[in-house]
Length: 100
Image 1: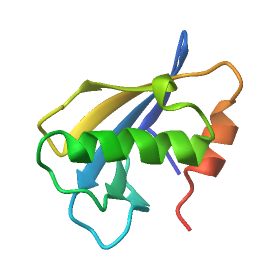
Image 2: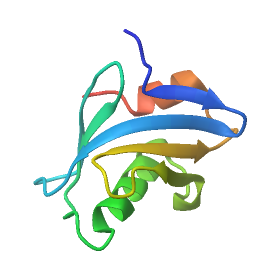
Image 3: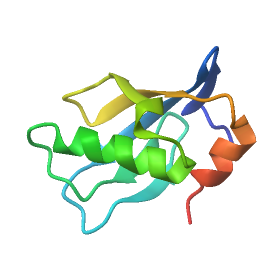
């Protein structure tokens, strides 16, 4: 399966996501060619969904929150995240963000 939602950068990875706020729980729903679909428990007000997304991805990858940053799409459901890490390989990221 093509994983265009994940690409390598000089400092780690770039992750394309599409979020659905106000879910019963935060979870990865599926992956398309362009984005990893994630449901977040947080509402889309006052940056709460963005904070929840950063916390969720950091927890999934076992990284500090400071390693995950939203670079595009602050007010959109589609977002680009930069993940700064030298400890993880592409395979590690794909495995830890796998759909269960």
